[in-house]
Image 1 (cartoon, one colour):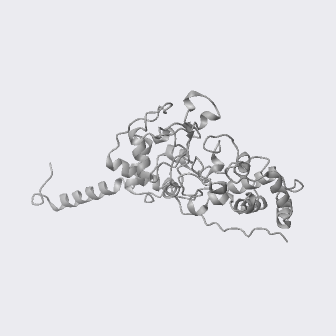
Image 2 (cartoon, one colour; image 1 turned 90 degrees about the vertical axis):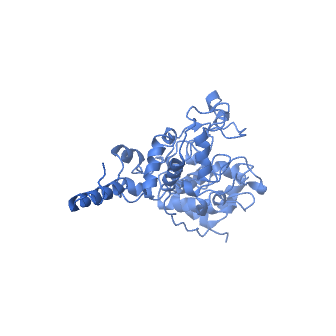
Length: 344
């Protein structure tokens, strides 16, 4: 029973105030568990293949190629046109725009942390960044470049001849070295330290009470870790999440297995506050819409993932979950646009 202010002794009043202060600050001081630290801390090294180890020359060459519109047949579109560092390494469009201003069927995924992914593209049709790099360049609907024409063009630019020789001595300018160089640069595009990362490292004040609550909802009631797990918040799997009106077969077109009908790769949640719109078709423009979709369990469609079930989240749980997602966004990494080699 609580004592009234009149019936309390000075000692009791002091103890009551201390108890209130402890209760109000104890949750804010809560730190991550050992399991959380092990699971969600960035790996010590960026994965890279033995035949394409990153070095300054390869990264510099890849960066120039990434920002160079001459890699497209129109000399108008570069890799950075769709993967804009100012827009979370995406383009902020519902779905991508390709060659001749053609509207494409899928949204532009961020290339942030692609080095940690086991599959590339929404449908996972290739595994490595080297395999991925040339795909958009030669695709008719995207950059629509003829590879043979591109090789001739690059060989006529002395600056590129010198850069390729420095990066890949004796290998020359060819499709393989173009892909390797772009992949090397893309591996440097990684998320910066976020509030969540600082919290994992022991700064108990790095995340708000709401965000910490949201992390518990994320792991528990919302069951987000069924797909968004580990440092990169992705299981590298493919799931049909019940998007309204979706007719894209997704992973099923690559592997015709019934459970993969309409399934797409789980994207990273790193910097998720910067990468709207969301989903492979850009259906949602806000995190609130995304949370509401999952809260309802998605639409009842063929091949719906068994993980998709109504969550019955409260208003506060939704709010906390969004605050946690925002805590995964770090400060933008400064990127300077390179001076591109020119024809003499």
